[in-house]
Image (cartoon, helix red, strand yellow):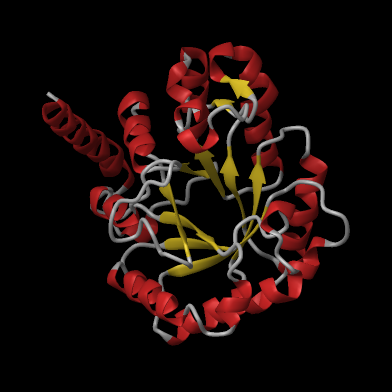
Length: 310
């Protein structure tokens, strides 16, 4: 029965994909299709939650999310689950042809070893994987949430490691990567620009959006983006500590704040983690709540109003 259900989901996705694809791409040149005015929507952050989002909500997102680490490069060529959902970037690329991918590259505890050349083989393998998928645009968040104290990134070593990875990928012929400098968007003592790798190494500037009331801290990062004329994305977002079952209340307190903030600050991409966090072993019991859009009709309908708005 599970196999039958799997095939039914695949067929349903193909139908949805065709419905959403053909109105966007007609017989005219692709370049002539006007850019979407509202932010692009990326959904994550594991392969099962992405599938269920598309099937249950009936919305094909503009991009998808995945994670790996410089230490193991897990979840790229084969499925991997360490308690945070199944990561399988290649599977996403093959299942959702032509859809961009946003990847968080974990570097915690590896900065010095990167600079010592101990992960050169990993960088080579990563470059080969990028080049194998050269027709897919990939946003690479190198050492995501660089200013999160839990990551313990010393800023000089972080900048050097970030540059080291970018330089090597470029030398290895990678042309489909956009390099993302991602702040966790919360309070940090001092100037966060001290982590900035430099104008030629950053294509996009990003923040996390978990606390809808911490916008002043988020703006510190966006002001740096404005200074260097970089496009901005919300690279991770979810209504942390809330439950979508509360419907209108949660929408007004969090989701509406997300879209209002994005519109006000010309955010080009919103990446949303569509999880019931209590279903994810790594996060159980930590109070993250339930952010699954499809679990409340009011939020689902309001969400569709926003993401389909032109």
